[in-house]
Length: 229
Image 1 (spheres, helix red, strand yellow):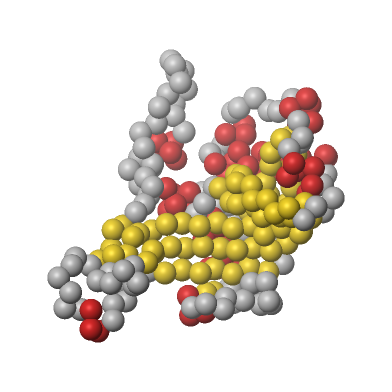
Image 2: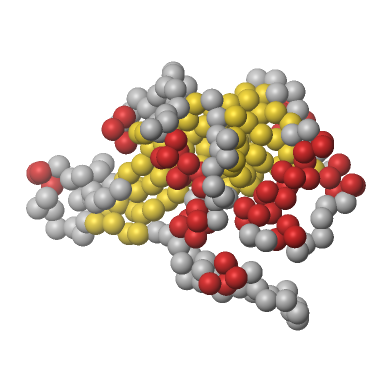
C-alpha cells in the first residue's frame, strides 16, 4: 500500500488513531469533494481561499481569476496547505464535554505551480469532465481571451494525512445513567432535482439526472477518473 511520508507537517499528534497516511484513504476524502481551502502566506499575512479543485494521480489542480491575490502569489511557486472536510453527523453525548462530530478530513502539503499556457485548456477540460462527464465536448470551449483571464495551478502532493471519526458518543461510564438523549444526527448533502434554465432542446446530464436524492459525496466520488501516473 502506497503511503505519504510522515513529517512534522502532517503527523497527527492529537488522537493519532484517527489518522491515516495511505494514498487510498487520502484519495477517498479528496475525490468525494469539489471545494478545497488553500492556505498560504504572503508577506507574513496568512490567507485561506476556498476554490474548486480536481485530482489526477498525486497531483491536485485548481483555477481562478488570473488577477486574484492567490494566483498572483502562487505564480512564484508558493508553499501551500490544502484542506478538504466532510461533516457526516452531530454526535450528541450525555455530557457536554463528550459531544463531538463525525467527519472525514484531509490535509495536503505541496508547492503551488502554474500550469503552462500550452496545457491550460486541457487542464480545464479535465475539470469539466470531473464535474460532468462528456461536458467538455458539448459546451463552447474557452476563447483565447477567457483563457488569459484564467489561472490554473497544480501541486504534487508531497505529504498528506486524513483524520476521520465515525460512530456514537464516547460517554464516561458514570454518565451512562444521565436522563438525556444520546446518539448521532446523520448529515449528508443530497443531489436535488435538476433545475433547467429555460426551454431545453437537449437531455439533462444523465449522471446527475439519475443521481437525484443520492448522497452527493458518493455520487461525486464515482465521477473520479482512474488514477493517473
